[in-house]
Structure formats: C-alpha cells, structure tokens
Image (tube, rainbow, N blue to C red; front, side):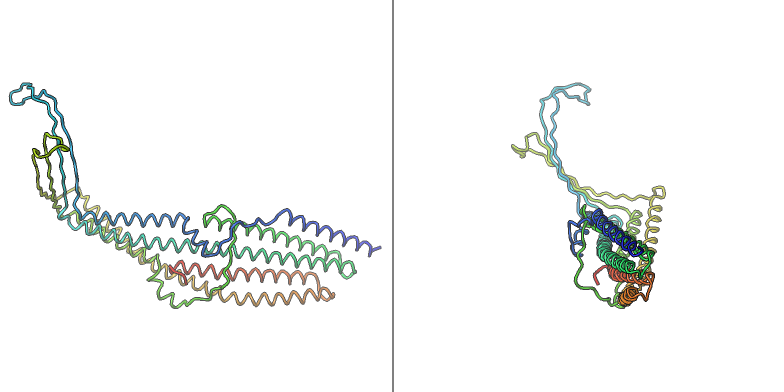
Length: 440
C-alpha cells in the first residue's frame, strides 16, 4: 500500500513539473533579435548617431569658422553701394528764402569702399592664436568623445554577449535541476529516498525556472540598450568575434598615455586658448590705426546708357582711435582673462594627474580580470567534477540531496563567474582604450 502511494505521488510530481515547465517556457519565450551586429559595426553606427559625437563634430565646424574669421580680420572690408534720387521741381532756395521751380531730374550714384585696420595692438594676432588653439581643442574633444562613445558601445556590446551566455548557464542549471528531480523521483519510487527529497528537488527546479526567466529578461534589456546605442528601435543581438584579445603591453601604455590621451590634449589646447585671450585683452590698451578708401561716381544719365558725364568723387582717410579711460572696463577684462588662464593651467595639470591615476586603476583592473579568467576556468573544471561525483554518490545512496544541490549551486556560480571574468576583462580593456585614445 505504501509503495502504491509512492508511485502515485511520484507520478503526480513528474506530470505536474513537466506540465509546468512546458507552460512556463511557452508563456515567456525569449523575443528574437531582429538585427545582428558585430563590434565594429556597432561602433560605426553609434559614432553616427550619438549626440555627444554629433556635438563634437559641430564644435569642430564652429572652430573652423572661427579660424576663418580670425584670418579674415587681416583683410580689408569691401563695400559696394549705389542709389538713385529723383527730386521734385519745387525747391527751397536757402540763400533767398524763396521757393523756386527747376527742371526735375534723376541723379545716380555708385561707390566702392574699402577699410582695414593697420594696427590694433596685436589683437588680431592674439585672436588668430586663440582660434587655432580652440580648433585644436575641438579636435581633441572630438577624439575624446569618439573614444568615450566607443568604450560605451563596447561595454553595452559585451554586456549583451555576457547576458546571452548567462542565459545558456541558466538553461544548463535548469536542465541539471530536472535531472536531479528525476533522480529523486526514481529513488523515491524505489523507497531509497524520502518525500522531502522530491519536494526539495521541486523547489530547486522552480528556482532554476526563475533564474532562466530573469536571465532572458536581462538579455532583452541588454539587447534593447545596445539597439538604442546604435540608433535602432529594436532588440539587437551582438555577434562575438572569434579571437579573444590578449593582455596588452602595460609598460608601453604608461609611457605614451600622457602624450596620446585626448583628455590631456584637450586641456593643453584650452590653456593655449586662454593665454591667447589674455594677449587679446591687453590690446585694448593700445591705439587703433585704420585706413579707409572710397570712390564714388555721380551723374544724371542712367548708368545702363552712358557714364561719360559722371563726376568722380574719391577719398582716402586715416584715423587714429585711442581709448585712454573707459571706467576700468579694460582692467576688468584683463583680470577675467587672467583668471581664465590660471584656471585652465590648473585644469590641465589636474587632467594629467587624473589620467595617470585612472590609467593605474584601469591597468590594475585589466590585469586582475585577465588573471581571473584562468582561475575561474579551473574552478569550473573542479566544480564540474565535484558535481559528477556527488551525483553518482547520491544515486548510489552514499550522499544526500543537500550535497547534490550544493554541488550544483557551486557549478552554476563558477560558470557565472567565468562569464563575468571574460567580459570584465573585455570591458576593462575598452576603458583603457578610451583613456589612451586608440585601440590597443
């Protein structure tokens, strides 16, 4: 009678669990990714659509326009004008105070003029130097944004790959839980296990199902984030590269980072800009010498008929303007430019120290992650063998179900650690590349 109860109970457990697993897998399918991209394609797409890169390219264009303006300040300003005037026949004679009548006519006037500053206290040279430094800063800023966006894209790409591998880990965990439950049911039917073993194995199977659902949700989130990064409104599957990169030469990186880092280059360009603006502020203390020339023609005949009777009027003018006092506005401008220069100097020095400190931190994380890959590989092999031995011991009655569940949990954690170690290394490598400013 007790054996019959065991058989009925075991059959109900097996039927219930198989139905529950099938229903759960059917109710929560993993949404298929509609687009697959490699790492290079993901980086290319993100550099085309990310606002930070678009803004950096706009800054480059603005800096180029400022450079042209600074050069154009050395060239004369040229104006061209013309007019026509038709007066009434009634005129006022100011000499006699009477209204006189004269023949009505139309007069035409045309002129061309040019003006240029001959001396302005070296302001144009200072503005040209500032514009050139601003262009260098914009170029460095663009390189920095490219590096940062590339690193972010790589991180999202590797996160999507890691989540996909964690789904496979969860699937393997669920499969092992099903096998353990089947072993517990078989032992219960044979009278070699208790009902508690089957219930415990059932709970472990449910935990495996929840872990798989969570892994699928994390994968969908990672693929959606990758899609947003590359500019598409859908899930994107990351296609892994076949070659796993090795550890770079860290000694060489440390010697070249302060010269190649976009952050350092941008800070140095900002210092040059600030120093040039100090010189431009000092130019207000000097006089400005300007020259202008104009040439005009006036006549009564329409210019499209003849200009032989036109009268030529021309003038050449030199002017000197020297502001001796303007309510201390020049002094305020000088102080403001000097403060900006001092701040830029401090920021550039801090940027060099910050890059050096970040490089130390990132290289330590990179070396640690690379060493961890070998360690967790050994842990996975050891946990796999331990699970095999524990399964056999439980099947033969020499071990407990708790030992089996512990061995399974150890293997699952070891596999999760292995996935994390591999992609932590790749993400740390991407961070170092962003800091250095080029691929390793």
